[in-house]
Image 1 (cartoon, one colour):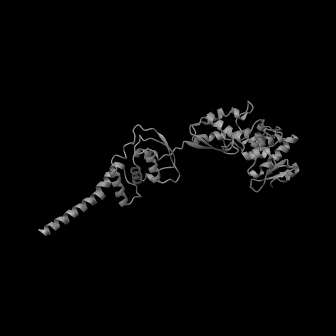
Image 2: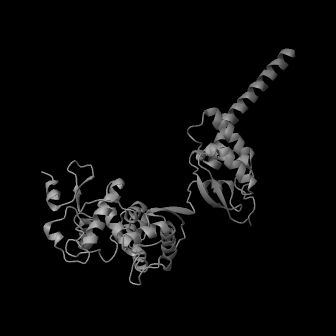
Image 3: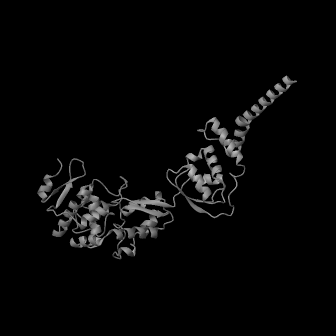
Length: 370
């Protein structure tokens, strides 16, 4: 009798072990896969069993919203924030019903590795599974709109389709033909020259008028009383100074030369010489469709004869308006130019982007490349 009981107990234990193995290796993972999808490949067998068991233990928590009538709120995930922290804050913010259920689900699915930092609009009317899907695509509320030094308006417009702003290049150019009042420009002036190169943090919902207003205010903020006094000391008003700075910007590759290049142009203006600047001709020529650029280079002899008020080889003085959007460094160079005897400059022959400067035309010719 005792031997019979002993065998019965062994058989019962073996059956229990078999059932446990079946549940662990068969039913539980299969059930979790059916309900929640295939587990992440990175999980070991033991981890798959553990997280499958956890998910099934949560019952309806993963699919039931915390509050079907809940109101949307902004939720930010910081760069480098742990998933455990995200889960805890989601529960503390009353967006999800269970931080543990959220954590177990994202680890099981592998979505913990693809949740992105950024700002999200989330609602407690969404289930944990829905919230997890929302966290796979961060669409920041704000965008970083960058204007590069020396761009003309058309180049700024061309950057808009990939900027995150819902502003077409055509709408931008049409609006930019009239400058905001904060700039106090002549009535005929456009905003060319007054798009101060910078990084602008803007809401995605920014309209074209709001964009121009923000950029105009940024320009006005950076033109100090000292700079305006510097412009006046050169015999220039702000509009004229921006026009000259736009030429200095396009002529300069190395910022440290800007004050010297500025001095050459101011010296020429003071004695009534033409400025003889290639970028003004490039601006007059407009878009070069063959080279797909707004800045034709090199210029031909015929190009230099192109009849336009912007051609400073033909017409003395400043062109009628800025030819690009100058950096703050170029504006400073016009306000506070170097004191020099030079009337000429040309690029050095070594490809460095630096220039040689000359007082006389004969010296200028001797500086030419062989």
